[in-house]
Image (tube, rainbow, N blue to C red; front, top):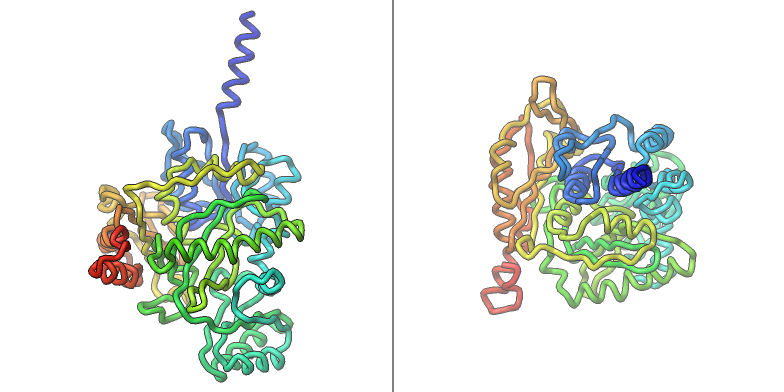
Length: 460
């Protein structure tokens, strides 16, 4: 009897030990690790390639997060690590391993894996495929075509009046698009891209005007659950000038994407996408991130991403009440998605990226970061690490282009924005650069509407 009792206790103990393995770095990886650390289900957490911020996180029982130095694209090494760890859930966050088929590989090995398969993630790794899918299923989108030859591409750009977006078909870390406003810019962009990589495929889209917004949905292959609206900032400098980047900041919710527009976006964009997936037998499980333009004719789809956005993940997961482990696991195994719940005291959030000098053209490193200790005690603020390393003597150093994501949340957007910038001003490293206008227009819009008595007061 005693032996049977001991054996049963061992089985129950094993069931209570839930291991998670996160594949992906940057701020997106850090906030996912931070959020999983809050789950009472997770008792061991591994991540790769990790950064100094992830290594400092602790689980509820006080144990440290384990970091591995394995590239997210080294599938053989990742599989070997997974076999040793034996995680209950693998979370693939980065677009590169998704495109390489990491989810397919882990699933074949019997691991429960969060993220779309290689075929399902094609919405992101092939802009040409995504454009054809949008047009086939009558999803409102920019007019566009794909080309492998400069002459035909330039002719199509001329047909659009020169105002167009010139996009690499392949993954480009958010930096593979040129926004052109006239014939000369379009022709120069197209010729340059083909000269850099002969035989590549480009997608030329008409240039839509309006306000951009980011949508995020969780999908279990059959149904979806919507995140609130958000807006990110891709240009490197104030007023949407400068180079395209992986993201210089974001905020949520967007007052420009009200409830009526959100309903319309899900009715006209998400519903036909889900129908198309069912018809074409695309079993999408994970996070879909459509980028839309709010035009005079309503929301139109620009492109789709098959994973959490960065820095959008920082502004979402700091507000999410749900256990992230439960959400990701449900999507991975096809279980019903839990109703998404959001903190009342964190009804709005803002993330400001602190980048190194010259980003995204240059990526300087090895600059000492100061001020992080001062930020730790601030209310409603968390700094997520993008590219950092910690030296043997305990100094925090920069290690790339986007260095830190200063994220703040509050009941009102104006307060969240002030907290984010107050915290950002405490941090210093040589060459530090940030945009001063994250959420600025949204706060001005909310204040203006509030003065005339609109329901938008709830955002102010």
